[in-house]
Image (cartoon, rainbow, N blue to C red; front, side):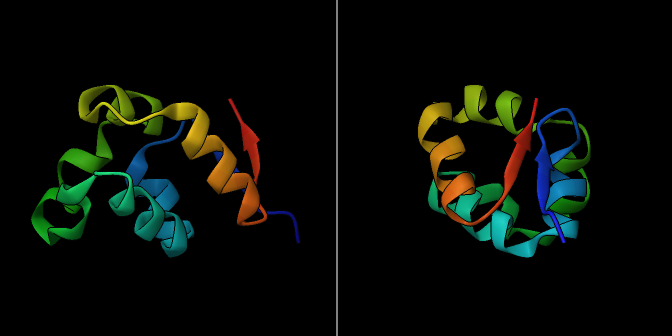
Length: 75
């Protein structure tokens, strides 16, 4: 089964489908994802690229790590 992270989908949708991506994003500084209330609210309205911009995270590194986890990326 092919695992694909679609960067046009919300952080909430991606992390719900693939919890391991949530752990990765927390390690990149997306600390609010660890908070259940923030995850249920704010994460529903932002994409990974948008959240990376807000947190100053490097999208190249995020893409690389997601691929290393065995995912394809759709943008």
